[in-house]
Image 1 (cartoon, rainbow, N blue to C red):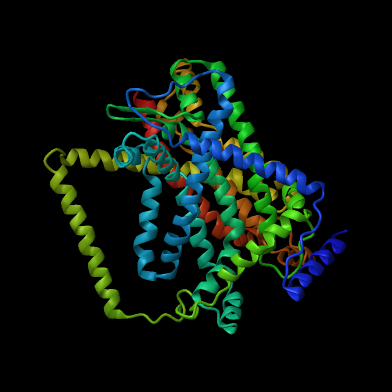
Image 2: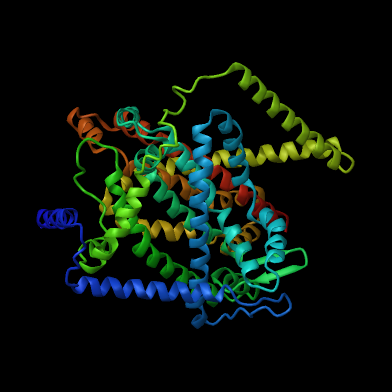
Length: 529
């Protein structure tokens, strides 16, 4: 069946190339189903986007209804904000991570800065961005909407950038050598080698970013900065009001709506992307089992939609494969670029001066209000938080690395677990805070110790998703070689799979630790309240 389908595709493409004309084939039932789905998505997204362009007044904000009938519209608005933030995160990833990977000097600044940015709580960004966006579009709901999208962006972009940076730094040598043999320009190498190689891991981290957006959606939609209170229609505002009114029934309705929404975009977006990106796996032999998607299979077997989409695909491929003569040939990262001692020295001096200027400015503004005892308290409490984060990351590693490997090496299992993992990662941890506080008070437990697991509750999934991405990208020929040599249990873990997934794990551990620092402010607030 697959051979007949492939032969039909080749014949169709050959006819297009020889006759230089597009002949539309008769639509089949799959065209009708796909067209109905496409039109429904366009209408839903268009309707939700239209509602984000209306007038806005702080004194006359729309009331958030706790009726279950309002949840479909709220879920649509929240999903549109999250998809817009994902698009912005992808643009940021392709620019920021690429610059950090291509320039050794830029990496010295951008990667530590990225680690700091991911540790800043979402509320820290809202404190200065809300007023900016509201003043940028006065009298329009677009200002608060952009502020919410930016807040969601700050919970999505960092792990995607780390994932793409890791992939750019681990492109296999033989791929780089082959690209130089074909004299690829930097543009061609980026789109034909680096992006395809990074695609499997990037898609799994994009899934994690969507779930991370749900984790912070309450703070993003129910905005409270000083005297400014803004509640945008969405599941986050619905949950915030339900918690405020202690309406447990409404909270369960919100969880149900969130779960249905995650299942919907998993089947319509992420499952097709995972199945499509499987062709970019770097291996010498074909995998025995591959991911599947009913949406992707449906689209591949349409007639009319494929005929209409073919010119667009050809145009995009022509753009991505263009040589662009004004760009230099590809030079492998960190290999052929000559190092200049003088430029390096000037760069180090500039960095030292910049750090010294920032430190002096901080001391100027805070020195009068803070004493050395305050500094020692900050260092001591920061050390305690670091200890908690380290212990929890180690615990999450022991739990989730074996599970992630088992899922990633079995595409059929990943197909079933993927939506469940997204739902668990998206579960707002603040819904469990009242339960945690009640149990601590009820059994007279220490808040400092027993609230610590809340730090890792939402960020442990970064480790799981990255390990799944690493295991799913592990070459099949390596697995077959290990099976041929009959490598036993612990040696298989130590010599085969752990080295293969280690770059992915490092990315997951870094982003998980940053997320744990981000969540530490919530744990401290619960402890002190």
